[in-house]
Image 1: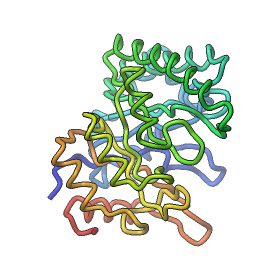
Image 2: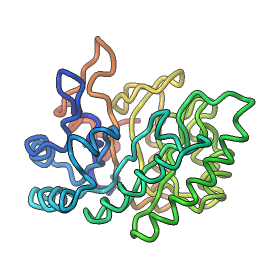
Image 3: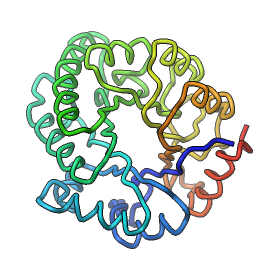
Length: 280
């Protein structure tokens, strides 16, 4: 029913110590065996630079070639986020430098989209205007660097007090920076997802990619579609009618709660049902 590629964020894969394993050879092989078409790299700053050495000469190309051998596309890279790597801070030169290095490496792996959070949190009301000003300045510079590498920079809508937590603020960030938009279906807490997406589309911003998961509208949960309140057929029909061209990319937590652990098999079955229109 929905003719989009099946994608998964590699943030789903962690070992017992909570360390990322998503770019390990056996994990990628398992993803391909479960019928996925593409993946999103999604690691911490230390994992990109320390564990996977992604920016070192030849590393990104080797990962690209290995994924190609499995029939997997590396569709996107999620740039690291934390207080230190927040581009809305006054002093963000190091964060900007490392984000550019990651995007340059991503271009060597033929990655189409670089995803970034407009800010970390919390952002207090009295500092919001200043943080917005910083974010717009730095994200505009990052977007220029991404364009030079042939990579699309996509700003992700965020929850709680983060910048980009409402559609009007997200629109102001996009207009000021020239960046594109990634729609996370699990982050909007002050504005329902249908209204959020409608406003973005009304202003000409169809997402270039998605983070698909479900939630309870009280907090982000990163659960499977059908285990929350999202009206999936409404959202997916809106995206299809707007001409969405990216993958159906799941960003799911392996451990949603102590009582709920999601397996790759359950996730695989769920994405098939979603794309077949079986989840309302």
